[in-house]
Length: 387
Image 1 (spheres, one colour):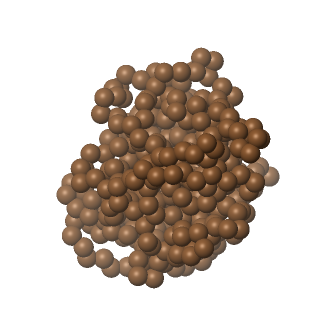
Image 2: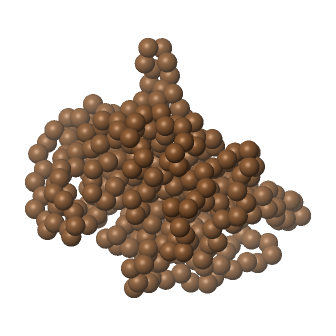
Image 3: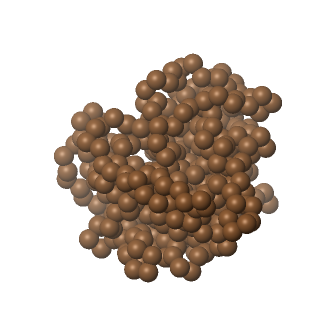
């Protein structure tokens, strides 16, 4: 979502530069199929005349990173050299995820109440300034359930309100296993954006849709045409609800944690005083969804409820767990690398030659689960990640 960053969670790059100069020695077993390489403490995405950084992804060989700047996708190597970019994207390109050699991104086209998953063929991103409709570099898959909830109205206490569950569209996207399942089959998970509204009580859940892509031919998708938007697309398998309290624009970055099989949800903090308003939450991947009442709905409604992991800090009044203090801005970029390593974004606005631009960095962190603390790290061998 296009939300102006308050700056409270951004760290100073000068401090990061100093900290990242410290040595780090990691001696863990190398994961299968992962070539040995070094992951840098910082990757610079560049600065562009776009809206702010929305999401980040890394390929499975740790060779390239991808950054979404709302109307532009940037591909870099691990030294921050720009390999190519896809430009002119109509709508709002949000969170990113890498899967089976492609980058998937949430794409909103609210002019027509339409929401998509954009699929980028990364092998075709070889130069800067590729127009999004050229050469099949970007195709789209329509998500009808999102459009349905976005355009739906509900009546509560005699008052008609727009947007079921407070749905403002989508942002978070990732690939992972079904919570509570022993199967390793990967699913695509897409998270709703949720409008901030302290007067409603039916918007206190994060909403996730689950999709099975095994029957989808990713080589036979159509290019996005804003003059004739798609109306047929993917059908979701399941719809999940996670009780966190209302947030500003819902899950901005959704990320699967293969260590715990859980799901990280990075958000812009909410404003309801009855909730802790954390910037980061973790869904417990070991607990299967349970059918239960979705509070605040009229008439009474039940759905599949997911459980927050008992990590971070418990807000006793609401029963909500989360991480209250995060360096950087996970809401504009958050990548789980495995073995408790993460890339977390730094984003903001600068002026270059009197021109206002949006910049982005990915900084390397390691989570100390005993202290619930993300710590800045320097260069790290890929063997430490054990894919």
